[in-house]
Length: 366
Image (cartoon, rainbow, N blue to C red):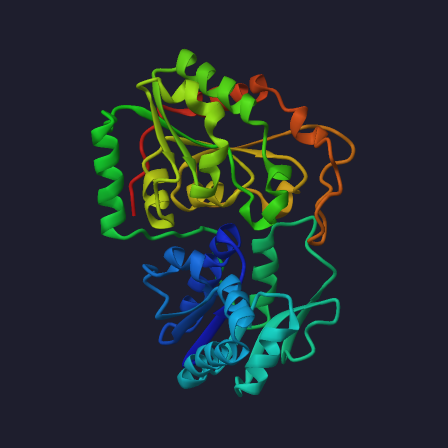
């Protein structure tokens, strides 16, 4: 195969799950050119990847905004993006979108071999398809392994990869130096938000903020550690509850102060990362950082942490109704008992287990 295009139009975690696909395809076809179609927001995950030759970026929100203003400009933008893909003359595409629009486009562009999932009959325009009724019982990455078996790919390593730029690593070093954090410190990353791909329902994946506040105070009392708190600019309005812990000199506030690349570099500096089920948790996996992930409505067997890491601890409530997020349908639940039932003690017990496995050392940044 001379030219291969991978398509994944989803969020941070979803794109990270595809990095083993990139590695496996390059091993199978070492002389191939690999392109990748993704959202503009997730591009930093791939733009420094040594096996990705070219990115094709789009932003669904931008297209919608342009369409509202001018349908003609919308068509021009759409055609420009399509022509960029057409110019490369791809021989094969691996479409991980599970929708028919992308495979239709590939067919119209003359891509001869089109691999993907046939979910609810949406694989009409695929030449090679793996029928699925949804995602359940096993991890997303295992579904990708099954799909690549149609290409007779035998070597498949589940390690996630996120290569950060030198400038982002320097940013992380400087920030920590300025806050008196050195390599001898146990640095614990905390991500109390996340779930951005769920939009207005993001809170449905989040452990209560007040629980995170108590957890941070307990960690500071129990361990000689320093803590860095992560979040996006959208989370800045919601972080007033953390004002108390920000006053502690052992706490670094990074909420809304990083790009995705800088976030990846900073997470790579952590000894332990504690978060909700979210993209940053998967970044920690890609950076070979020990994790504690808090799962509510989502099935950890499907979307849980993976990768080459010493320890991943999953904290969840043992209640009958979870997991309730199935086949891409969000739960219609107002109380979120699955998250409310998780206590700080459960997370602290997981932290103690991780921190006692061996003397924690910083992962080597890549």
